[in-house]
Every structure is written in C-alpha cells, then in structure tokens.
Length: 488
Image (tube, rainbow, N blue to C red):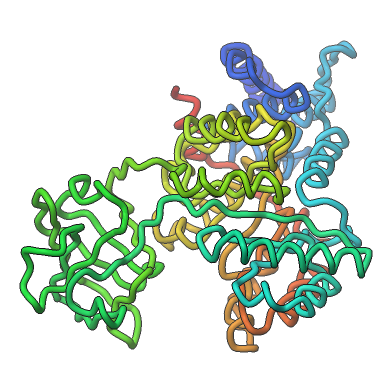
C-alpha cells in the first residue's frame, strides 16, 4: 500500500517536472532581454508559476505524511526542490541535469540583490528599515542623525510633496549624519505618479473642506460653471477621467473612509451618491486620494511632473519608487526614459498598488529582470482600497511568494505601527501585522511623532519573530495570478 502511494507521488511529481520544463522552453522568448544575472531567477519564476497553476494540496499531504518535503517554503528554488524529492524516491539524474538554482544558490542571489538595493546593515536578523521624511526634516539635522543611530537603513523622500530645495536640504543633513556617525543609509525617492486627488471647485473651496452626508449627492467634474451655489463639486485633478466613469461604479475617497457610487455620467460631469462615511467627521477635504476600483482609468503612470523630477532623482537617489504602474509597458517606458538621464540610474522599485499591477505581477517582474537588481513595494494603502480590504491578507501573501520565486527583494509598506507612531500607543492588531513584516526584506515606516519608539518596537518584534517565520507550512491551492499568466 505504501509503495503504491509513493509510486503515485513519483508519477505526479514527474508530470509536474515535465510541465515545468515544457513551459520554460515554450516561453524562452521571455528571456531574450533578461540580464545575465537574472536568468536563473526568471526560469525559477516560470517553474513556480507552473506549479502554482495546479492544485497539489492532496499530494502535499501525502508528501508530508511520508516525511518528504511538501514543496512549501521552496519558492526560491522550486525545481531543485522537486528534483530532490524525486531523488529520494529513486530517480537518478546526470550531474548536468540537476538545477543549479538550489536553496544555497537562491539564498545567495537574494542576499546579493538585497544588498545592492539597501546597502549594508549591522543587524542580520531583521529586515532593513525605511523611514519616510517629511518637510520638517529639512531643518532638523538632529532628528535625522538620531534616526540613523537607531536603525534607519533607508531614507524615503516622496516627490509628491515639497520641492527640490527641500529635498536637497534633507539629503545634505542625511549625508552629514552618515559622515559623523560612520553609518550608511540609502536614499529612496518616490515618483508622485498621477495625482488623482480631491480638489473642491464650488462649495467649500475657500475653506478647503466641505460637509457631506450619507445619501447626499456629490458631483465629479473639472468644470467650475453650470452648478448651483450649494452643489458640492470635486475635481479628480487629472484631466479626462470623467468620461471614463460608468453608472454603478464605486468611488473611494480618503483611503476608503468615504464611499460613493456613480449614478449618472454626462460629458463633463458625473453624479456620485455617498453611501458610506466611516468617520465621525462627515467632511471631504482638499488633496485627499480618490480611487476608482471598478473603472478603466487610462492615464499614464509616468507623468510630466515625474519626468521633470528625474534629473534630480538620478543625481541623488539610490532607488526610485514607481507609483501606480499597471502594465509591463509602463515599466519599459520608465526604463527607456531613465537611460536619457544617467548611465547607471537608480534601481527601480515597483510599487504594487493597483489591481492591474497585481494581475500582471509576473510580467512586471520579467520586465524588471532586464536590470541587474530591482525591488517591489507592497503599497498596502492604495492597494487595499483598490482590491478591497478583505482581500489584502491573501494578496500580500501571494506577492511575497511570487517575488521570492523571482528572487526580488520586497518592501513591506503602509500603516506599519501607525497608531503607535501617531499616538504613542500601539494596537494589538498592528503588533501582529508588524510581526508579519519579517517576511519582507525591508519595512517602511511612515512619518509620525513617535518614529524612534516605532523603530525600537519594530526591531524588538522582528527579533522575536525572526527565527520562526520560515517554519510556516503553506498549502498550495492555485493562485489566480499564476493561472492568468499560464493561460497567455
């Protein structure tokens, strides 16, 4: 009986092996422009996507029962792991048939790429720590020095705010602090991307805020005229969006606090019914983010403002965060534009914050592999609003797995210990969330009044969890990302 089960397992694994090799051969054209040092990563990604387009949960249980690897936690070297199991079951391979991308090789690859992106760090146990700078940092050398001494490895400057003069002062203070302390710190700069934000055009425009109520009607328009005095009119601040909307589509404002539904769309305006306000203050403020998760919004990911920032970024930054990219063509466009500004431009960080970016993640990673090193940021703020909060736990897990398979370092971002940073006291749930961040190579902390305490708390949490998270055993149901890719 046991022999029959093991024979069945061997047959299933052999079929998987053949599928992996077949898919890699069939899609070898994808490797045409791949950087030589990314070839093994690209092949491993294809092998992993082949595996994850299958349902192998029953086989995993059988493998586990018989004391064999269940293929969990093998994302970075999946074909090598499969071969190792087959060898245990009696299959023999010639030396040149064994996949070079084994656990040790993949680990070294990831370490090298992580070091290229984030530099040196003192503590090998915990991820790198990225700190978001705000305007006040431009005149606060002491704070920057203190952050550096308390574990900051990467300084984040968001180009959606301030200007080049302010960014320059921040960078000068950082470099001075590095010289005085002997510590190193990489500079990461975010492109602003399309600024789909609230702009009040009618009622409340002078105060920068307007009162709303559930069930009330709000207009979306770029026009100042043609409305009654009491009408609430909001511009998305990006031309051409209104005609892209359709009745029944949802609209979220201010990180999902306000939810509306489009009712009527005309040439230059759309009416939106407010169906939820998840805040005690029933107001819409200027410059708050707007998300259209159901709408096909076709606007360039790389804006004219972004292009104007690139000369400064290429001069001063080590990494460049690409906001709101959706398709491989978006990334190819940025890669092409960067060549005009620098022979060795900053390493690109792909910010995954749209449903399209999640769906196209494998293609985005393969496009990124034209560079020696690049990274991914799980930008959980906009992503949660776009895909739905209830899906975040699942999607952030899938992104981590697929990036591990592609040997791509990941930045865990948005609301990490945010309540602690703002109020000085952490919630229980965000402590658990911070522990989960140990699965990433870098953790981003937003600005707040208690950043030093956040770094200390985060370091303590990550030290405690650091020896445990690799022991998780996952079961593999098919991933929709993998299924969609394999159908192409």
